Amino acid sequence: MTVYLVGAGPGDPGLLTMRAADLLAETEVVVHDRLAAAQLLDLAPSSATRIDVGKAPGNVAMTQDEINAVLVEHGGAGRHVVRLKGGDPYVFGRGGEEAEVLRDAGIAFEIVPGVTSAIAAAAYAGIPVTHRGLSTHVTIVTGHEDPAKGTTDTDWDSLARAGGTLVILMGAARLAEISARLIAGGRDPETPVAAVRWGTRPEQRTIRTTLSKAPTAGIESPSAIVVGRVATLDLAWFENKPLFGKRVVITRAREQASVLRMRLEALGAEVLELPSIKIEPIDFDLPATTEFGWLFATSANGVKALFERGIIPAGTDARSLSGLKIAAIGPGTAAAFMRYGIWPDLVPQRFVAESLLAEIPQPTVHGERVLLVRAETARDVLPEGLLELGYEVRVLNVYRTLAVEPDSVDLDRVRTGLVDAICFTSSSTVTNFLRATGSIDGLGIPIISIGPVTSEAVRATGLEVAVEAIEHDIDGLVAAVLSQLA
Image (cartoon, rainbow, N blue to C red):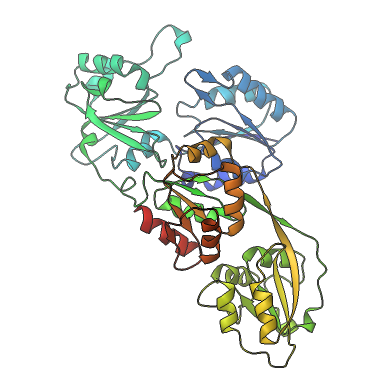
């Protein structure tokens, strides 16, 4: 097998290359540093071993020699290994050293370049590192050389005279010395400087100053420090996104959260994924579908569980086989049917059981049978209403929701009020999330609800709903977040 030295990019998960994503999806072992976006690890199979080798000032999970040993151990055992490194492996990432160790051990390796923060952080701050009339070249330099060498390879005097754009990585701790040496070498003390901390991430912050003032400007690690005339440019786009700087909690099951997360992150939000439930399929005996006139589904989870039993070949229109009419409680459930080539006959205008009951036609014959696919624990509004209309109802429970314990670090952020909103997408997420966090009353955190049933569950706990989605789906929930925070 092979050890892949993979660049994770500077922080925005969307900057991961397709090659890197494909390798993560197949890996057996992920050896990752602290700068890799945490959700990138979710691309690896759940069975993959995850090894944190992150380094932070004053906190080193593993030395470089120990990291090398881990790569040799797992690579030598014939495992598929991804060494996930922030930025690009060969741009101050010590990827060359790791490649040398693997080569010397006779272990196959491959380099997968990543987007370097030297370029991306500046771009996300609205600064092109080269620009007509301002800079024709860019130099990338580390501000943190190996202290064991006892000498420096960086000729700051030459860099001062070279002009153009200078991008300094890992230089925040030595910025006073670096600034002094550049000025002594001939750089104008008033040379513009922009320091981009956590570039490309929702917590990105940009400090603009000058070379002489930079040491006292509050620049912290990790920052990409841009020195040169281009630092006067402010072609802002990332920090102008409507939810930039907002921290939003989503409580959906992890299996469902990706679309909502991507939508909010695309608007600039920092998303804390704190699933309070997980979806578990349950065994069921499927009755003959020819016995029913209607198939009702109240969630995409129910549709998925039903079809994973293989009752209908994916990509075919099952109605031509069974004569069933299909009802979906909302567009998300309808979309789940469509993924199997099935277009529902009925989707109510409001995505709750009451609307479905209001819009379904009277049974063609008394006792027309309905197969209702749903969660093990659900409201009885729909089956009771169908009975009142004259239908005969068979309830088929195909999945259940189970409580899970959210991440403790992110839970502490909620408990201390360090979030800007919490999104709830079902009554079970409300119940289980508050069981994990305890009371959040008095913290002033706005609660965004996907619909009236969820809102009712929130109010039953004594909390208030700041905004309820007009359309009870992901689009509506995102719109509700925007209305509250933008």
